[in-house]
Image (cartoon, rainbow, N blue to C red; front, side, top):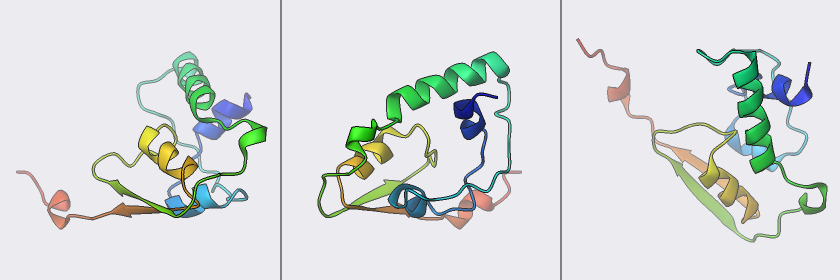
Amino acid sequence: SHPLRRFSLLHLSNKPVSSLFLCSTAKMNGHVYRVPGLDEEEMESVTRKTFERYALPPSSAKRNGKGTAILWFRNDLRVLDNDALYRAWSSSDTLLPVYCLDPRLFQTTH
């Protein structure tokens, strides 16, 4: 199978966001989850477009930013195609992702 498609299907929830972006040797857990409602062709298209947009060329593997970027995740916890996350990562030396868990989100809505 295509390596980009295989990567896009890997679930990254066992790794904190900071370790995924600050450590080039971060390992994924290998569990595969399908995106609901997408067939193989649509999944390949989404994967290809995501990697074309966010993949760093080998020559820019080093980040030139200084300081710590703090990124506040409000509702969207996506990491593979999050433009704000990519910009914060590429323009800083370190990245501190912040998400405030609101217990009301887990209450029933009956």
